[in-house]
Image 1 (cartoon, rainbow, N blue to C red):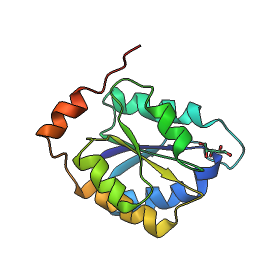
Image 2 (image 1 turned 90 degrees about the vertical axis):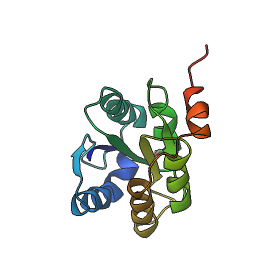
Image 3 (image 1 turned 135 degrees about the vertical axis):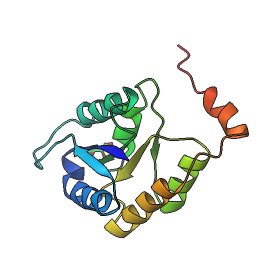
Image 4 (image 1 turned 90 degrees about the horizontal axis):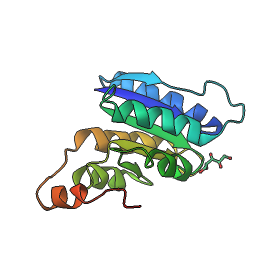
Length: 144
Ligand code: RB5
């Protein structure tokens, strides 16, 4: 799959591990920044990745920040994006199975490399279940 990857400064280091995992598991990734640990604003990078995924340039996205919260809130402002903050590998499975999530958001400060790799494994190994979940996902719409 083609994967857009982004972070803020807090996620730069673990993003390297994410990209290495993606590449060694047969995915093509594009690091949309930042590339140093100089302080940046997470909405700028979350928006960049979310728009690229929503526009169909990438199949899915991966975002990291300190908690994963800021990037998930930001990415979910883009129409067509279902960004899921995955605090553990089980969340990653369920976000794909039930929510057809298209961006996985990860915490660089509260997850370790092993948990992140397991989450990525589950995410890419899991398909959307459809059925009753499709009805629910179709109801996720901006309302005001
Ligand atoms: C940056 O210090 C921090 O606020 C950011 O990485 C993230 O955790 C925001 O949600």
